[in-house]
Length: 67
Image (cartoon, rainbow, N blue to C red):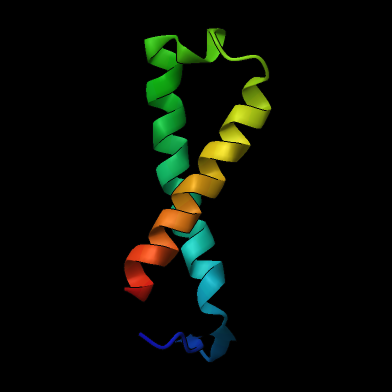
């Protein structure tokens, strides 16, 4: 698949920006699940854990779409 700019109400948006937004939404949902399950209490640095989770989700989305 070729990544091209998306025309959003006359403004061209880079496709990575939309993928980053999608990854952030997925990560927000996973963060709520992790908070309810109590997983964040067991990690050494919760903010670093959530950032790493975001990077993993973003990378997965990019790989899935690029395939």
